[in-house]
Image (cartoon, rainbow over all chains, first blue to last red; front, side, top):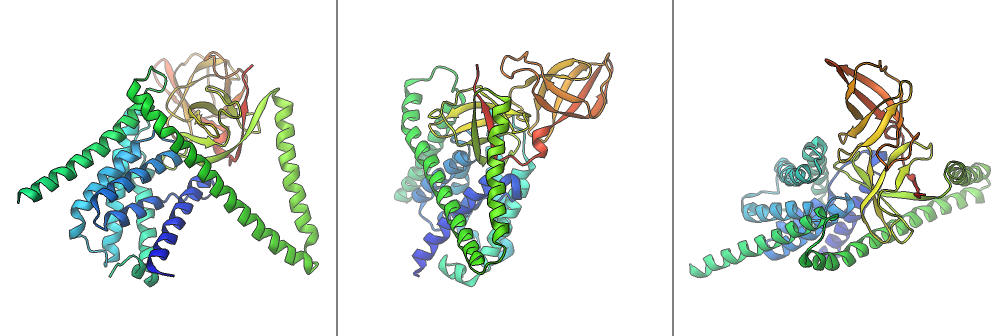
Amino acid sequence: MTKRQFRFTLALFLILMQILVNLYLNEFNINIDFLFLILIYISSRGNFLKSLIIATFLGWTTDLLNSHIIGVFGFSRVVIAYIIFEIIVFIDFKRLSFTFLFIFFSLSLSNLVASLFLLFINDYGLSVGMIIYQPLLTGMFAVILVSSDRIKEAINVY
Amino acid sequence: MDREANRSQKKIAVFLFILFINLILISNSVVLTNNRSILQNALHLVAYPFQTAFVKGSDFITGKLRSYVFLKNTYKNFLVLKKKQSALKYENYLLKKALNDLDFSEKAKEKFKQFFIADIISIDSGFPFSGAIINKGYFSGIKRDMVVVNIDNELVGKIVEPISMFSSKVRFITNPMGGVGAYIKKNKLEGLLRGHNTSSCSFNYLIENKPVEAGDVVITSGTDKIYPPYLKIGKVIRIEKKVLIQNVVVKPFFTSKTIKKLIVIIND
């Protein structure tokens, strides 16, 4: 399997995992944003327009899966994709702790933006699950994922 | 130098344009019940096929995945049967499952004249007590404000927009938007029950003249003209006494159960 095929399979796996998380959330209580990992990867590749468009689509997908108003997560993911794109040169993905912190803070910030929209539109209130637990679990999952040599090689983390 | 600045400006313009599209989409959804502008209608028409395609696509993938899991299990069971071990156990499992499904349908028939049975296909991961998406849409006859209950005839919520062809959104009674006209069964103390996106709801500003105790059952009153009367909602778990009033915290019955199937009652 070539690196490209492996990356495609990995992305497909993450999308399937996201669908399963939303389907069985009330049984397993595992709340990880797998789609955000795809966004991080795409944004760190360096193509500005591609990053923003994919961020929009991933955001809309999150909106659809979470039955939110379309555009809420679209907006927040585009904002975070832009920020990632601007600061990517300063980020060192070789250190697992740094990867974890980066994913935690970026997802937390993105979810905070979305939460503010939901607060103003639907009066939902700020969710600790979205701003703390989900970024924590997603960061931990990303660290587990990147600690595999095969995946590290496929996504060019050296 | 100028070229670099120009490029940077272009980037910001693209970024702002994409943000603007998202904001238009948000505003398009927010004013669902009001009159839409031509631009909003046009955007809705563009976005709607994608939404439908996505829902159908995710249903297809989930279906295939389930089929795969089912086939894998069947193959395993075939091997077990081949060895003539635990054949009866497997058969018993299948019969029990079929009986449960039949039981679900029969129980629903006993309680409601007309209804749909729907599966939950997605739950809001950020706010699990706000709502869920079910696999029945306007193609099946689902309409706004239809009441949703679980198999034990306990109130879960109601259907809200958006309703697509093959899916619709259920807003749980634990969602802070809206409220349920309800009263405490024991002393008929009536009020508006509101959610907070947690596993409990609350009656605010109930007059203190009638005593309320933990464990009292709360049912719908029908005064909100949406939910029919006498549907079980939950039980009182906490009372906060104040001057002249009391705040009563209610835990809906459905929050303590795993829900996979729901019953959508067809309005008479």
